[in-house]
Length: 231
Image (cartoon, rainbow, N blue to C red; front, top):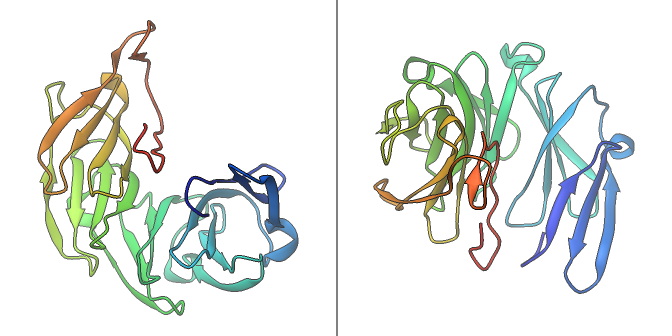
């Protein structure tokens, strides 16, 4: 969306950009531009400025160019993803699309919408989120197994952190995001904190603690980072 800009998908189906200098700009309306919907749930933007919208009920990811022209769909239903089974998705630097589903599988398409494979099932127990690194490796949050890493091709890389309360451990990890330096920020919901890991996967630090006071978190659900690295 541009450096320092905020992009969101609202409940009317409008993709909205907030530019720090120009203000609010409604880029396009997904409901009018796309192939139809039941429940739109998530938004991603690639390096070229294309928008990707997750249509959750139909297990479909629709791709639009920066002006809102519909380009193509990545259709999970065609590959056996059940209704309402979509959890999260991610887009690689070269346009590959990964859909995380509640069957603990990651469904994988190339940039042209050709389905390639489904993977990860034996390593995930209760998947909850997916993110992608600058090197196009995948990080999947799992409520039981913590953070699970895969190569972009689907090859298992390893586990990061069991379900406990210590540093580098998790109790209901819900979301992973990765900053421009490769550090990973993981929402550790039941522990009331955000944990930060190095690009190589080692524990670095913790933001917040469980509670209701200043700097406390009470079952956090999501996290974002701006270009200045503020969380």
